[in-house]
Image 1 (tube, rainbow, N blue to C red):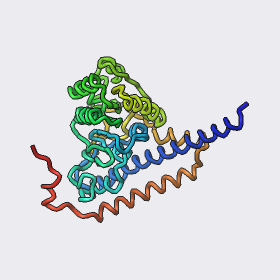
Image 2: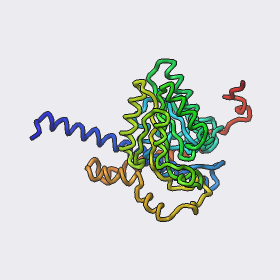
Image 3: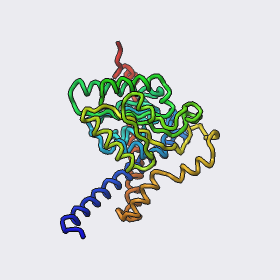
Image 4: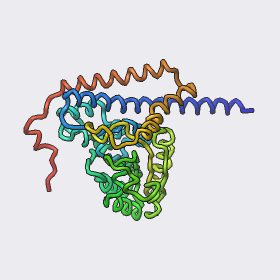
Length: 333
C-alpha cells in the first residue's frame, strides 16, 4: 500500500507527465497545421517558390527538441519547418519568410528550404543533402573549444546516410568527442528511392559502431519515445561523452515536394504508416490517461489554428524587401 507521500508524488508525476504530453501535442498540431496551411497557400498561388514538407514526422522534431535549451543548437534539412518551429523560431517570422517578406526569419531571402533563426539556436537550414552535418560538427567543436555544455542536434534524412559528408562528420565528431546528437529521420525514401535499394543494412544506426559511438533505433512517430531517446543522448553529450546516432523510423505523409503524387510508394505500406500518425498516437494516449478531455483538446487545436491565421495576416501585411537589401547580411571572403 502506498504511503501518503508516495501518493502525492505519484499525483505530481502524473500531472507533470500530462503537462508535458499536452504541450508536445500542441506543438505537433502546430507543425502539422502550419504545413497544411502553407501547402494550400502554395496551391492557390499566393506564395512564391516551392516546398518540401514533413507532415507525419512531427514527433521527430518535437520529441528531439522539446528539452533543448535556447542556447543549444540545431541544424536541419530541406524539410526544416517542423525543426525550426520546435526549436523556437517564431511562427510569424516563419510565415513571413514563406511570403518572402522582410520580416521573415531570414529576411525573405531563404524561403521554405532555408529557414532558421540563430538567436534561438536554429542554424538556417541547408538544402544540400547531408550539408548540415559538417556544419553541426563545426558548431560542436566550437562548443567544446569554448568549454560550454551546449549541445548540437543534427537532423538528416536516410538519403543523406550514403553521402560522404555523413561519414566525415560522424568520424570527426567521434574522434573529438563532440557534443553532437545525429538524428536520422528515416522515412524510407530519398526522394523516390527506397532505402533498401541503396543501403545493405537493416538500420542506419548500425553504422554507429564503425565510429565508436552509441546508436539507437526508435519508433519515430511516438513523441514520448523520441523524447526519452533525446534525453539520454543530450545528457551524454553535455557530460562530454561524445556523439550519438539516433535513427527515428517515421514516414512522410506527403510527397518529396509539392508536385510529387508518391506513385512510387506501395499503397499497403502507406496505409500501415498512416495508421501510425504521431498526432493520433499522442491524442489517444492523452484521452486514455485522462490527461485532458476531447473538448479540451479541441480548444487547444482551435487556439493553434487561430495563431496560424494571425500569422498569415501578419505576413501578408509585412513589407517587401527593398532591392538594396540584397547587399545586406552577406558574407564574402
